[in-house]
Each structure stands twice: as structure tokens, then as C-alpha cells.
Length: 61
Image 1 (cartoon, rainbow, N blue to C red):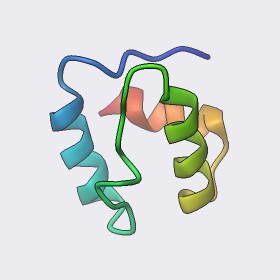
Image 2: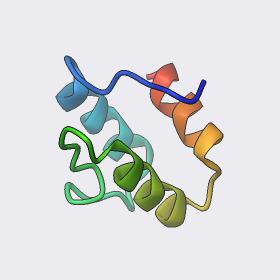
Image 3: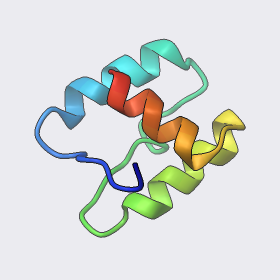
């Protein structure tokens, strides 16, 4: 559960996350290679959820 695949359909997943959580911005969901942990930390702060909860949400999309 500690790793997640954020390549491939990430653009589609971003759109679904922004629909589900209106507070998220394009900058919050900026994913660059090697910066996954930084992005997940931003999402944790913005959504008030744990890393595990964030990963489950992303995987469920």
C-alpha cells in the first residue's frame, strides 16, 4: 500500500480527483518523477487525510 502507480492515466485521475475534491488545484496535483512523496504530502495537508487514505482514494479512481 505504500507505493502507487501515478503514470499512464494520471491526467484522467487528476480530473476525477478535482471533481471529487473541489479544493484541489492543478498545482496540488502536479506530479513529476521523483516528487510523488511531495505531492502526497500536499494532498494530506489540503484534504486533512492520512497518506494511506490518500493512496486508497487514488487507487479507487
